[in-house]
Length: 247
Image (cartoon, rainbow, N blue to C red):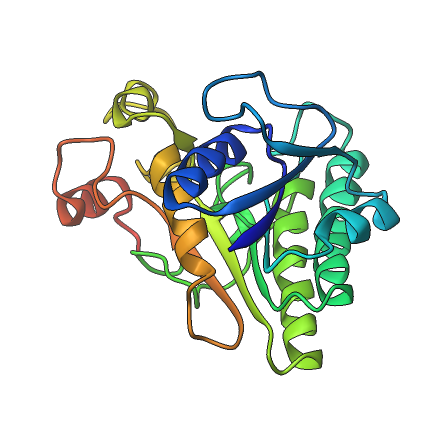
């Protein structure tokens, strides 16, 4: 499969490159800057483009079978709120539109667990645990809102194109190994509501993105991409009762 990959120089992007090459896929890598040269990134087809350069995206996607859109500002706080929101919302729309303009109907895009309001909310609210894809949206800050909107955009594209398949990947904090997450999300960590003791490995995130392109569903679906264990050695039911007694 020939895959256009935006955000190819980011952490998840580089993990996707490694896994995609291992599986024998061809890649067109798109980012503002090229990834550092490693064994995995050597001899890549790289196109320098920003997500607001729509014509460049259309040209870059030409001849591809699928799109994996990972380019985004990955969290609030490092840029002004309006920049975080507008960058992510415009980027996700442009990726979807450039794909369909090329007749590409298989798309994977980076969403986030924060699409419903989570880590960056003042006081995250959960109606029930474990959360699932049907949980209500309580997003309140620009990053979470941008991810919720990227999913709403995907819903709109799915209503317009009957043959399209869009997977929105709700990643939880993506790290190389569980140990890194476990050092931060400990049993005595403050505000457990803001992390739920959850994480995702880079290699698992990459596999999930590639698997989503093989899905036989039509329309748009959101998927939580999260490790099967947690960062604490406490059974989940016990942890829920201890840290979330009101849920």
